[in-house]
Length: 456
Ligand SMILES: *Cc1c(COP(=O)(O)O)cnc(C)c1O
Image 1: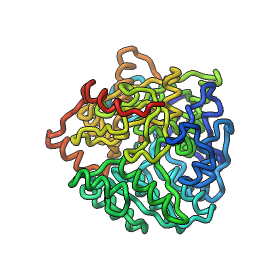
Image 2 (image 1 turned 90 degrees about the vertical axis):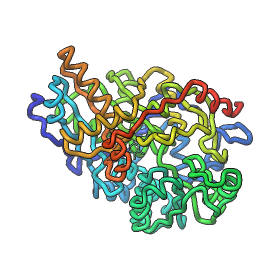
Image 3 (image 1 turned 180 degrees about the vertical axis):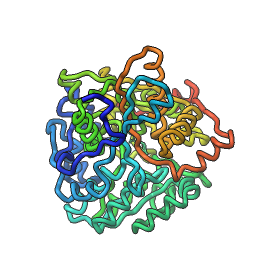
């Protein structure tokens, strides 16, 4: 079939939607390093993890061998409300760039939460419900994860307690109200409701909070409240597993038209959308069946892959979570306050970290003004107002398409458009007013925060 017959949007029939998630760890020769108990430094067991997470999710977290895990019917039913998400052939963008490359993007912003995070939120809420729990706790930074989780919990009738980083709580009242509309309780973090929060407020009065602190508060409440567990929206193996639905749909849509991807690009915060998008492609690569260039894109202000160290580190500031081996900037690392583009977590998925260490993928970092230029260009050409996070991938996809223009190669470029940017208008405002700046941490700053790595 000639490429010209490819529709602007490729949708899958319901019958073509994935029936199982794909676990890329099953095909990795070097498995991701295990989570360690911070007290004993021994690998965490399902029993230990089950104190914090739902049991089924603890099992998924540690399962390095099962390649396909069936998606329960209830979750498939929920997915049908907003999936399959379209794989868009970016004809307008290609024409505007004058590139011979063929550009495709998988758009995950077509649901109320506005991002891919709902794919894992519904799965995590489902297993909590099945275990007979009353509710879940979590943290949210910019608010996408909290929104997704509150939607999933209200659908299943679970209570949802969200700790929202205080500066976002104040600056993003609309996200907060979406969560409350779905029945979640939203507490600004640090708060007086937990030991970790009270301690932090005493030490740093007036602090506007951080993701790491909100995680510690949410874990404290989950562990201390009967019938509650903690859930996390990125970084973990289980989250990458659920997000594989993105990659499986993408691959099915491309296969339908006989298109073989050459380059696959995704933004990388904790690694969940990227890990999900690339999963089936990476599987083929690991099994030696096909080759792909896979590129992770991160902000220059929070460059875990490109300037971090591959080591065991704390996942949160309160140091209550297990230790994870990952590319990290140190658990104290907080990107500069003028960093508006999301993707601000100090570490990276341990699965992606191992794949990167083994040379199966590349990583690059971009400055936020360049990211917003790409976002504006994309919004004007393709119509969708992209999330700042997603725009990191747009920027590199455009760069790769322009390289094809020089070489005359008609490469197939696929990127993940993880969400929409309607709740990021302060960031767009700064860009539109010419007030956006780039801050790139110095080597000294990164070295300083890495000094606090645990000795493992
Ligand atoms: C959370 C988020 C990301 C980054 O998280 P990952 O776990 O790295 O995927 C990217 N884009 C959007 C729209 C998000 O909400």
